[in-house]
Amino acid sequence: MKAAVKDLDILKAIQPQQVASYLQNKCWYEKRQIADRASIWTQKSDSDEELQIVLPLNSDIPGFPVSMNIMLETLEIAEGRSQLEILDELISCVPNVQVQGLVTDLKKEPQTSQVTLMGCAVGQFRKIYIELADSEYSLAVKAYEERSPVFYTGDLIKIVVYILVQ
Image (cartoon, rainbow, N blue to C red):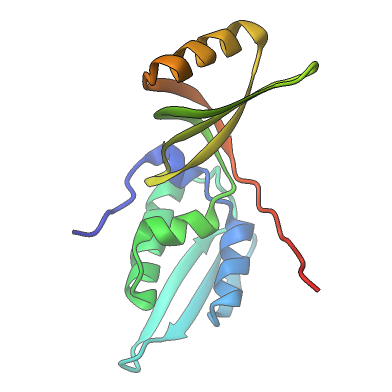
């Protein structure tokens, strides 16, 4: 069974610049640009069919989430990967996400308190790091000790760390 991304908030969170960079890295060709409204991207499929993506350049236009949904469907076909895998590479920030998970680690320092959750966010199971105020941190400690699931609502920001090995 393939997962289809239909959540409007997630689709609205996709940044056109990020998609353009992704398409360029995946050997898509920008065929043309329609003023400052959209760009047309093409790529030949394995069966020599020309695939096309219309990428809106402004996330505030009506129909933006629908265009992002169609773009994900096209990339799913072109790459033979799930929409969730593709979305994971495209998204760097999703506002107002609710995550359910288990507290797996606690770090209390003088200025900040950090909690690590293992939970599902944007369709994938992952580690989520959250900074909490002292009053919220005590609730996280209790949930950790009791192994109780917690719910967190907030903006999810993806941080990519590159480690260079010489």
